[in-house]
Image (cartoon, rainbow, N blue to C red; front, side, top):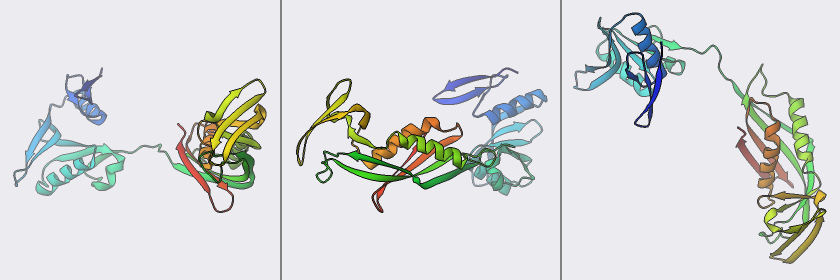
Amino acid sequence: MSTKRNLIENDIKYLNNKGEYLSNRTQLSLSNLLNFLGKNYKLNSQIKLPDGEIITVDFKTDDEKYIQVIDSYNDIVKFNSIKNVYPELKIVAIGSSKYAGKLSEIESIFFFDTKYEKIGSIFIEDPSLSFDYAHILPLVKKCSILHGHTSTVMVEIIGTMENGLVIDFSDAKRLIKEAINNLDHKFFINSKYLFKEDDLYYYVRFNGPQGYFDLQMPKSTVYLLPDEATVENLSKEIIRILAPKMPKNIDALGVYIYEGVNKGAHILANVQ
């Protein structure tokens, strides 16, 4: 059986082999199954409730049986309303397993996935996950002079579990250490303060709250950032370095950097 997909009024519609437009894949599969079995049916058949409300049911067969595809909680309300008013009506619900608990499974058919994703997370906090650095924040008076920190790092790794694991702790720790080694004993500065450079040196100039700075620094000691050298942006930089090293089942990373005692920054980012 051939099927086509068409875009109708900004909604995806599905075209079955009879030329009928269906709203979702379940409706498409069901209509093709009924056609294969030689069952005549009417799409979007209406049932009138005693209070005058009109409810539209997805399928009505020629032998007065109804089928409602459960694709939302509104469909559940619709189905239950019909069953409560007309308990003798021959109607069955077909839908996703996530709605199964809302309807009687004896009267309904649900598609339960044999494989389903389990999302988990691990975190790694270890004294060895630390780095030393210097930076300048020209926009902050107290921090607009050259100064340094020793920062420890905690990383949270979030993803789909495989064989009961998000990622092996030893592998995660190794990847994190490789990432922060790129930052260890570096001078961080926003690249917008870069005046010029040559083969060996960066030349940084800025006029800050504590005066005019003109620095010449070996390139091997400097780490240029696209924004101010705050601990928040260092967290983002660690994620940027770490993300490509992660296995494909990892969906997000959280990086905590402590700057001194009892203060720091936390950035959580999707890595896809």
